[in-house]
Image (cartoon, rainbow, N blue to C red; front, top):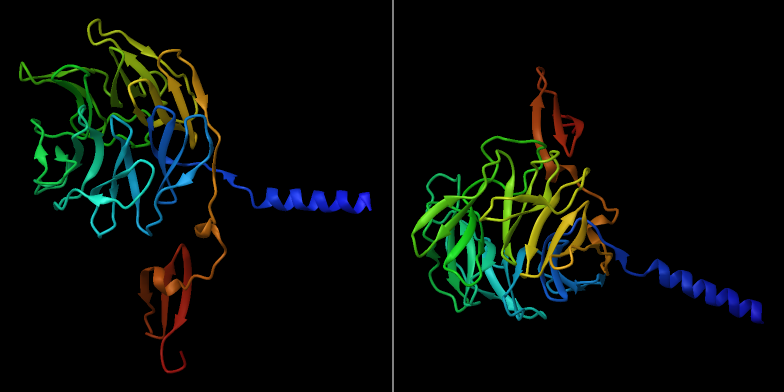
Amino acid sequence: MRRNIGILALVVVMAAAAFAAEEGRFFTYPTIHGDRIAFTYEGDLWTVGAGGGVASRLTTFPGNEAMAKFSPDGKWLAFTGTYDGAAAVYLMPAEGGAPARLTYNPGGAQVVAWSPDGTKVVLRSMLENFIGRDPNLYAVSIKGGVPERLPLDRGVLISYVSGEDKFLYCRRGNEEYYWKRYKGGQYQDIWLYDGAAKTYTPVTDYVGKNSYPMWVGGLMYFVSDRTNGIVNLYTENLGTKEVKAVTAYGDFDVMMPNTDGRSIVYMQDGRIHVFDTGSGQDRKLSVEVPSDRWALRNRTINPRDYLHTANLADDGKTVVLEARGDVFRVPVGPES
């Protein structure tokens, strides 16, 4: 009897393990506030504790919700969503709830930051661009309204300097290119805008990636590939221009960092890390995502829905089609 009970208990444990939440990887756009982290996975927004663990899904819309940012008080999440078709800025309680749409402009809208007082969300958009090259930065009230352009000729990322009328920003480029030692036109540099003096000053002079400026504790944290071609986290003292490496990865880039002014959350090798700026300690988190993994299930796909190229034979009796990397030969005529 005891042996049977033991076997049954083992079966129950094995079954529970089979259906337990799996550790996730390849999250995108993490954001942090205190002991909470939000991120995008499977096109939805999730939250998890700053120590890792089991994540909770906040959104279930079939479209995409990404680039979430916690408000300065941690009560709200601003993010880019496609609920109504075009990408727009939405606002929802940090615990979850029905999102409110804030922008309706053409040219798309990608959330990049909050104003320090928490009354506006900063976004980038091609709203005023006739030629799609470099977007502009705008601010929209959390109550909605017309986005107001920041005093810049162009911009893609921003970080406000606490207590001053200044902000760090990237003027142009693609912050998430993955081209080793790239020095072409898409690399980013960092500038400082002084609202009182109305001046624009370049901060970085390295030709290569200088991205995601973050003002923390009197220092600028940012990512760069200046040492070994791999993107790592650095600090720069804007007064002395001294640059120091904070991480030393030699395999995969530090990606999509975000800060709450105390900690920095980022992606590396598909996993979430949290760097404590006070202690200098870095933690790699284990995050479990309870999902049905529907996108990974085996399923039948009709190649006719994925046709890319076609070519007709000289005799007009056969068509060659390409779909999803495979080639198909299809006869033409009454017999087909």
